[in-house]
Length: 392
Ligand code: PLP
Image 1 (tube, protein in one colour):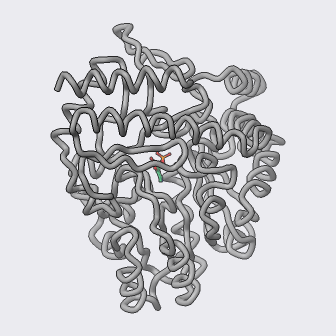
Image 2 (cartoon, protein in one colour; image 1 turned 90 degrees about the vertical axis):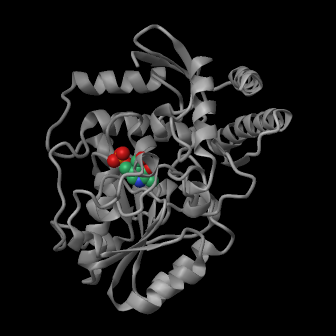
Image 3 (cartoon, helix red, strand yellow; image 1 turned 180 degrees about the vertical axis):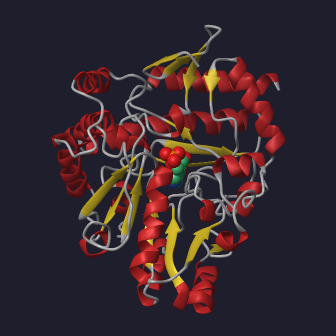
């Protein structure tokens, strides 16, 4: 790609696309929003990194703790992967336990022990999750099916005394969009408490997208630790993790768990993230109502185009993320997602790409809507989908 503006991107040959990838989530306000570019330029003029905190880092930390009440203290890093790596280390350090429970189809970044049965690119390419990962590390990971309380209970019964954490995307978005069934996150909260394990919500995608307080606010379940990435950096490399004060104080220099990074909290990311979070706070609930209305419009249009073309799909959506799964059954977990018709997806993807609509080249991803998408962009998309399906 060569450039992006609002909801559109251009490739190096000059072709223009309506973008639903949005760099896999960070661009809540579309490509190159003026207020973000301005903040990045201003920060760059004043020096891009100091290896010491700046006012912007303190301000964004205060803002996140206000927006996400379960986060009492926060530490900034450079990516979502670094956030999940660090959260897992902190959970192990704080509990003195080794094992981590994760869900099949959830993706927590390029983290050795969390690549087992991972979603996103690992699922798309069908690569064995443990290639290049030490078997000893992979053996510390227990995989359960998403949305299955019984399996989770079983894992705790078998390994509870040695489980440091259960890490989960509270709304799974890396096997396509799969919401939690009612009661599942509540059960996860109860089981982790009962067994003395840390509940980590990986909100790298859902944070600041599902609501200002993330999926945890929308769904009313409070984790011990939360991982952030994507939107928190306003489109600049950034991640963060935070949670209860007593847990976060296990981190060095106060506590014994070491974690640091040369570029962590750098002014470019902090200032880009700060203006984005301030804008989210300024717009409040109306921002999410607007995104939801756009999402509903897209969902309704897709439902009718697929029905007209007699193609079986399940469209799953929360707010501004949706996935049309090529199957006639609801998708509740990774097994369901894997049973979708991937060759039908491939044809659909290429049809859209050839007609100026860019979605992720995988059945296991969501379509991301930003405030830069308009009713007109959505209607144009729906019309194109109808044309593409008719031609196939
Ligand atoms: N966690 C989730 C839920 C993600 O979707 C991703 C990336 O897509 C990550 C963690 C890793 O984030 P990053 O790519 O910034 O390392």
